[in-house]
Structure formats: structure tokens, C-alpha cells
Image 1 (cartoon, rainbow, N blue to C red):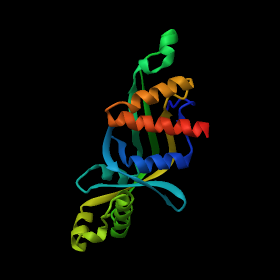
Image 2 (image 1 turned 120 degrees about the vertical axis):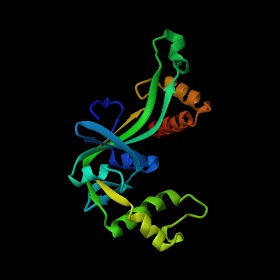
Image 3 (image 1 turned 90 degrees about the vertical axis):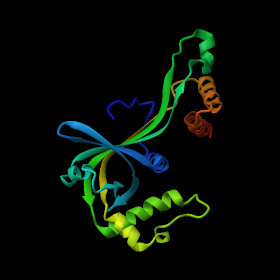
Length: 215
């Protein structure tokens, strides 16, 4: 991420990892023969010998893992809530008109080097971590033990584990921090009244930031 304005930049690892866990799905970008390629996959953050890593997996038929065998550099992008901001939500529009539309968003990017594994124990532990994290809120959480062991083993043979050894983790929370409070409150109200789920999600992010600022 070459241009995160300082006002929007987020570098606190706990905040970034909380966002990674909540978003879950990453766009993993690699370069093959000079051409960038991306694959969407769920990834989870763990620590391997106290170093931060992101775990994921792809189908055995996906050629991307062959690149990772050679230790290719990769970029994982976690796109959080985002929303179009209507200028009419700013009270300052009525005062001087010096406002324009913009886009608010939350994004986390992790850079590092990829490695692969087909170790059955690693894959089993990875899939358990992945599903437990998302099943926790269910009334009857699904677990790996709910399916026949030979069925799960067969599926595991068809995937390859990916490990991104993170060397840089950075985020951008562009949520109108540079605007005066009345403008921020106006945007929150406008987004919260929207029928678009992403708008309401951004309103929640901004609302939490206001509470943090006040408290």
C-alpha cells in the first residue's frame, strides 16, 4: 500500500487482525510471468514461532500454489465495509458548498512470501481453525467431526495449504476523520438510513470511531 494518507493509516496489529478475522475473505495477489493474478479465498491469522502468518488453501487444480512452491511474494487484501458518501450529508455544504462526493472504506493489506504444504495434519488443523471461527455464532455449530472421516480426508487430498509469512501489515480506515464532527455525524446518519447493507456497516464503523473518540 504505497499511499495510505497518515490521517487514515492504521498500524495497530490488534486492530488490523480483528478486521482480518471479521472480514475473513482475502484477495490473494501474485505475479506470474509479469502478469498479476488474484484468487479469492478465506484466510485466518495465526502465529508460527511467534511470526505472523496468514493461512489459506486452494484446490489442487489451482495453478497458483505452484508459484508458492518457489516462495513467491504475495499480497493479501481484505476489503472491509465501504460506502459512497453523498455531499448533502455534510452540514458544511449549506454553509459554503466546498464539499464533493467521496468514498469511505476500510481495507487491510498483508505483504509477504508464500509457502505451501500438503501435510494432512496441518490441513486438518487449519480447516478446524477456519470453521471454528465462523461456526462459533451458530446455534448448533458444525465441526469437522460431523462429517465422515473418510469423506473429510478425501476432500483434504484435493486441496493445498498456503502460508503467507507476513512482512508488512497495514490498513486504511478512511472514515471522514479529517472532517469536523458535524460532517462526520451527518455522514453516519445518512449511511445509517440507507437500505444498502454496506452503507449501514460503514455507519457502524464510523459510529464506533466516534464513541472511541469521545471515550
